[in-house]
Amino acid sequence: GFEPIETPAIEYLNVLTGKYGEDADRLIYRLKYKEGTKDEAALHYDLTVPFSRVIAMNKDLPKPFKRYQIQPVWRADSPQPNQGRFREFVQCDIDAVGSKSMLVDAEIICIVNEILTSLKFQNFIIKINNRKVLNGLVTYVGLNTSWTEEICRSIDKLDKISFAEVAKELKEKNVPDDSIAKLKTVVSGGTVTIADAENLLKGIPVGEEGVTELKDLFAYLTSMNIPKENFVFEISLARGLDYYTGPIFETTLPEHTHIGSLTGGGRYDELIGSFSGVDTPAVGTSLGLDRILSAMKQLNMLDKAQTRTKILVTSFSKETVIDSLNVASMFRQQGVNTEIFHEPVKLKTQFSYADKKVIRYVAILGEDEIKNNKITIKDMTTGEQKTLTKEEITKWAATI
Image (cartoon, rainbow, N blue to C red; front, top):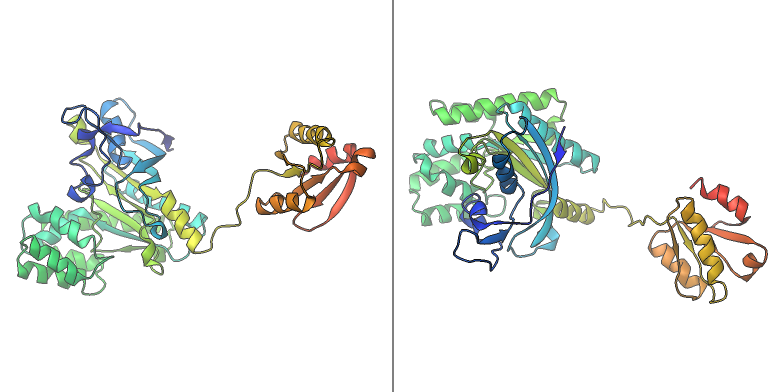
């Protein structure tokens, strides 16, 4: 039930800024266009904020409205090819707008599980938390909720740096030592279950609400037959973007931590309202296509590159090129993707080209074949060769 949409690569700068948080805002590519005015523009940083603007501008869309979107985004970041991190990369987003039910969140997570399973990823884990639990955690350690964004930005780095480094960063933000110590016992003191979080946040309304949502969400995921080893509650998961309001989720490969997250998303019930003035519940996730491909390449999960071309027609000389063109045209008219080698070079070179492009069949038209009105077909996979008449070739081509 997800419909495709696209949004412009360029957005007004004031549409993008103030939605992601300070760290992310610094990575937005700003354009030298009407700088300092309301029309100042930038390349979009993600697909969620532009999508929220579209929903705010089209209030009559039937709700719930579900969309998918596959487009490039731009971030002024340091490229790290082994992590699939680039300045321009392709995001694949799925989002649903108009429902507060945890069933929607479960459906999004179910799609992530289905995609990664279909791609044959092994031992991936979908980490799940709730920003309301994090709000409650901030209260639990003795701070008011105005500290939530700062705390989240810091603990979101725990998959990359130690708690000691996080603690140093929090200290520089003037977070009290006793609050840092209390936080450490929770986020770096071993596995914390949802039941543990429930006991921890008892009496803190926002935390209790987050725990209830997680209990419903996990029950739905179990009912949808997602393997239990594929998802887990992770109380230290923060997701650095400021617009999240409820469940958040992120997929990683525990055995290959250098790769980073393959997917990431969550619920953002207030983002659309920042444009329309009316809060509209929404939840979604992004799948980083470049990150996923980088991971598959490093884990040797990709088959040898293949081409759509099924047949390569050889070229022996200027005198035989017309016959080669006629044969290529015959294959194409049958709907068979066909290439013709442009230069009359050694047959070995043409075979090598077919091999590198994984073109399975080579149609050989030498002087003998042309004289006898026949074509030799070489199967590059098996090495088998057979010489057929044009009538026999026509029947054969219909079977490949």
